[in-house]
Image 1 (cartoon, rainbow, N blue to C red):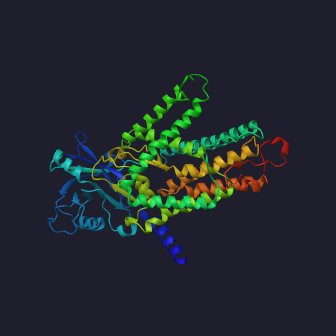
Image 2 (cartoon, rainbow, N blue to C red):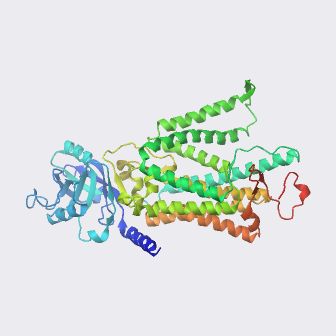
Image 3 (cartoon, helix red, strand yellow):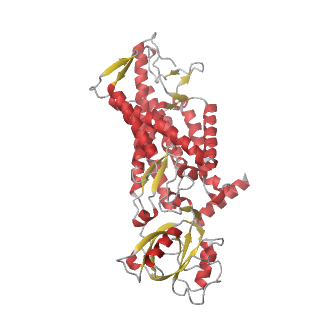
Length: 538
């Protein structure tokens, strides 16, 4: 145990001294001309070297093209050949640090490393580079060839990095999406519970219980099995991503189409018009329901066909994702607060382990959770986690799991050159706390609480927890396991409300279940007379 704690502390220190790479711009021209210049994406380390924020302030260097060598030593370089100039060399067997030392000793003012293949650039330790004073950047070899063809051997270059805003508006949009989805999903779950209770009361003692397609989690053993299966699936995706990703995509298309239909159908039922129907083989169909089903299937198919077009498909993916989460929160229910505590605590450990602990065991120190969520070939979106993926091609579509909300970041021009970047939020960060929010609303319904105090307080706690998550992410400049903050905020808030209202016993026990038929029996409110609850029992 002591060894594990020591390793975790060491890893935390490692993260603190590591610095991340950032996108910048390489302006190539002839003698610094801005009229016929060409710009390319490069990656550099802002903690090691500071670049100018604009082209007008950037220093001009004559570029020496040495892509025929790797510059692991000074062989092949004439004396004074690099003095006061920028040099571009090939990525090879030696480290960036070794290349930078050689280039600096030869008098170079900047080092650019060209890469032919997709690679991951590890974060650099500041203490190891304290003697390196020249800018070190990496670019695609393909871009270097293009510049060579356009400008020949008389290339001049300028390196600059437009400032990245402290708070990107994509985070605000992501906050709205997450809070909206959790709020509406929790409200829908409570509304469905009220509808079922009303149907049971109207049926009377001899009436049949309302049929429900809900799936309830009421056994701690089943919760543990569920979490274990999630771990197994995540590990399988990590090792067999290129095959299993298509299975997940297929499942998502079907599930999201059904979820979108469920959400839109609930809205459509509120419209009293257009209820034309016809019968076929003793089955009645509403015409508008058939059109709605066709629409939902079409939306899912369009997403499936154009899923790798980052320019606009994120809108459709987020729409389907919101519908998926809403339908999940309405369909999957937890029976009591005890199950919520077990489920959310286990998933908190699951989230933290696969984000922070797995880098100890994986190659290149990559997080299994981030690797699976973004895809093995993802670039740009991983920049918050200690490594930057640099693709060999400027536009290379790769399959990504459709399990995240994605909102494009509104970065300046460097991002447009390097490819679209996204702020992402996993469905689990919405669904897992959302299950507790939904339970709180159902408990308000069971106890006939018109103010919905449990639902409102848990929803506010989720919003505050999400804001806290984003603040930590911005300050640390690292991706965060959101459940690390959302679970304590929501669980503690719900427990405090129950204790203050002296309803913890009821809140903890929730509904009772008959094991044989899994029939749910609502709670009696404290002090409620039995004759008002026909068809109900404690």
